[in-house]
Length: 364
Image (cartoon, rainbow, N blue to C red; front, side, top):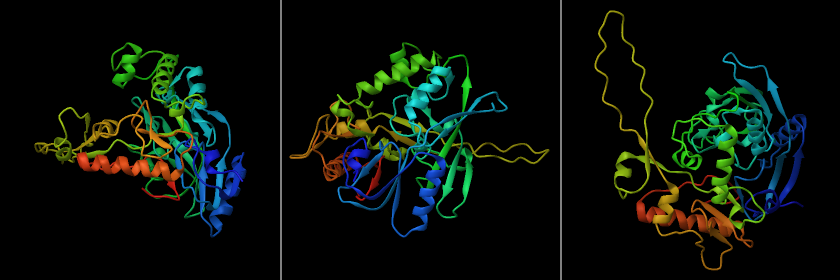
């Protein structure tokens, strides 16, 4: 039987009791409906790049999404290119296709492993772009109602590494619809300083989508964040912890050199009756602050290459956010290292880090 160690990029995890591979949408829907109707647990797996499965056998059904296909739909009213993409389409293959066509909107998301169907689950993002900016809708089989529905992006509660699916809406994404810009190969505005520096331009400039993709792939590879059989640092689930979002008061207690990015709240709508002068606006709300998980980990004393004695798991030698399998790790090794990082950062800075991967059969 195939194990999670063979199905995930971390290469750890036990065997599922039953594995079903769905190569078409009809097969995916049939497998999902059968699993939903049963009494045993079930789990949907795409590229396996964001999953940490426990060492013990999974006593249920794993549905591996292997559907493929990129369909161009009629352009929308703004003239944007619309695509419907099968959930099992490898994400970076999709990005490479859009870049080859000269369409912008996904170019900074190059090199992210995994499947397209997983992209809206946690609203993947990198180097100033997020899926939310181009996502139109998803096709979704709802576990609670049994309905097969199209959910507009506005109803997905998309935020930083979260969505309605991360908040408890359970089911199966079968396809994802995007709207991209055809600007003759010109990128979106470069929004991330590190990427702008790599490109030799200023934040806000536009370059070719091909140049953005090439630079992002180089940056990700330098951090071990591109799957490479010759790079042990890439045997990971990518960034293991999300950047924490804390109150301004909490952020103010950190060292002044700790990176932080204020998150401005959306302005509240104000209704002013006709003929009346608007009242002075209320004072701005405090808002929250996003911190750098990588900085917190490193400055708590957990450096690159760190490993617990006797463990097969280690912090990447290139990037403190990645927990890697050095060849002999078990899921327990990875989880123990993650707990150590969490407790060390909490003790040093009073900030709790939250895991980004889906945890199956274990807890931190």
